Image (tube, rainbow, N blue to C red; front, top):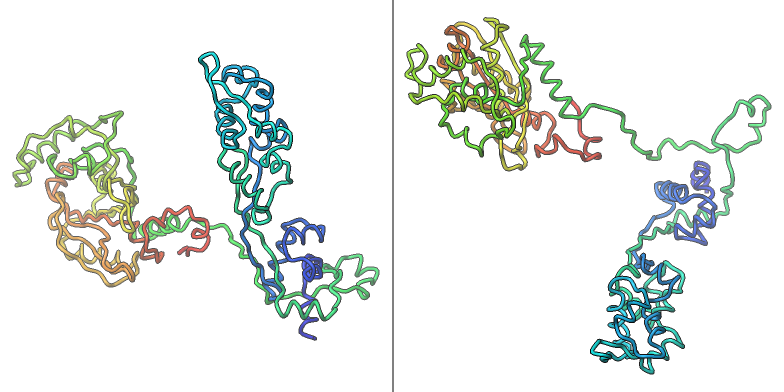
Length: 509
């Protein structure tokens, strides 16, 4: 008994109003009516009582008939077939006469004829070479006694389907076949069922009347608090979660990556999303016959189709492609198309920013640079691929750098950003680096996945842009996949999710 009293003492005022009613009423709508509370207040009280193990909330589904737009209209005006029969009660009429005098809505005459013919209320004949309609004895009886469908529409809606009699169900089926007269909806009903604990509380006759849950200044001042009953606080009950404001998880990750690179002494690079072939591919010593130039590998801009470039720089890159530009290379040995190099496209790789930096008068040697670049490539979207993605792109420019420095750099990136030491550096091919390598890391659930490509820029790229021969380590890492490691996400699409529940519960690094 003490346990029950302790539980009752903790009840909220809304629970105290609803609980005594549960031995008489169980459905939500009945509890709302009997308590005088709003539905949301009763529902809240029921949920709290369920949390305390006093009741169980159960849900039932039932079919309910409601009037549609034409049904509401016919209640006022009568069914169109009734009006139809009245017109032809005393004489045979042609269809054109019925339409003219009856002022039926479009299609209603045809419906009336179909309905009344099935009821053996009319016969269709010919009058003056025109289709005509004659009323039969059964039609006159329907006019006198009324139709089942007409009687059905006079009922009070909504109506539960299971409560209908057989003739009413017959009328419902006929009306359902017609346009916007009735509609059958599935209605979910909530009801509360007392548990054994709830029944004990009801049977115990413990008073669950009004108690106070707030101590006021006046009560303390006049001493009236001593004679009042206060609600006990329940510190064990579960309460609604509070979701404070926070940065979107992937946005926060990108900011963290930027902060880390800046802390390592890197300078951030910036550039446009809409690039030219020149910066996106040509300046990177990618031949114009390379498969990446295909329309299926890049999003080309329709208007404006071409962009503006420094023609003196274009001439140097043209020479690099055609003959190697005094680097000891023979180049690609084809005729460089200067018109094509002006074509505009959505940036396909962050390396375009590195090319811009190498050609910039802001380039410092030695220097370390990085960029977080949004890139676009046509792809089949799945758990590890997307048509647009973020790359972290970077270069280290200094005399005497070699592949050992590159390997150390890639290892540091994997440990720093993916938080894994399970990495593989494998040989690769990129037109603008030699040697080239790919960085792979092992995801705890997806297994080995590629994080990005890297290498040492070729002289045919570096010399035309910088005017000198210098070592340049370069890499481009897929930030989306890197974020999957850090955030524990298995599907790349979750990085950009609009799912509110996911956004509220996902971790933020």
